[in-house]
Image (tube, rainbow, N blue to C red):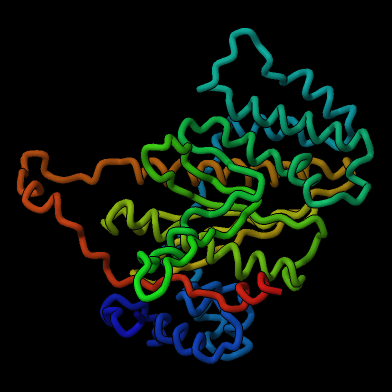
Length: 371
């Protein structure tokens, strides 16, 4: 597939280095199934500087190229959050009493975000009061008691939900079964499943069309930094590949038209009380780029509630807004001349799919499942 890629569509840095070629050559040298084999560039992967693939300056250029900005919260949302910039549960409960949204004249369109913030704050106050933030817990506890804020944040979206319970990625499933055929010389192969994620941001399934996916999150109960084995496997390998599979099918949905550069997928890596927001986009024709926000850690001490909890709540809101934004782009009509009737001439023809780098097939994960 790589040989079929158009040289003119490759990504050349100011130093003259071709990102596509460098990733391909590095992937050939890797004993492990590194994301570079899928033409995924993660500027925060230390392999690139350690193995002299890119310099720090080149990686910074990769980070900045056509960099997308995150949705900015309105002042009203920031004011709502800042009212809970407190250092005790007593003060937080007082703020909740002053700012609650349980009104008879509640308007979802105007107050859904404020209502969600109230729900999250109240839930976390109870965890602090009951001493749960000072105790170790299993993975499921963190998902239901802390990171449930993500699922509830998506309640405001009419067409998208955050699907929990180790849901399998449909994008990965489609990719794994693309070469599946009817039985011939050998029997028909079994259908393969996609990666299981703790949360998937997915279009509601109306059973009429295949739902689109916009992001995912992975979680572990034990807090780790970026050098932790679980964090590296989930955050630098599994999640970027999953986000790429999702992105591939979003781009197919819009036929790789002019909207492609605006499309991105998002996700979280959760490790105990820590949270890292991750984004994947395609700034050039073939390269998928990972962008990472700084890791946020919720303090187990309520006196740091404002400085540690509120940024996490804000990052959750940002994630939902990115998904909302991408869904609106996907759903928007591809602008064309409404009086042009020429499109009828080939509307029944199957369009050829352009040559695009596919996500690599990992023999390592397959071997792990067999053990």
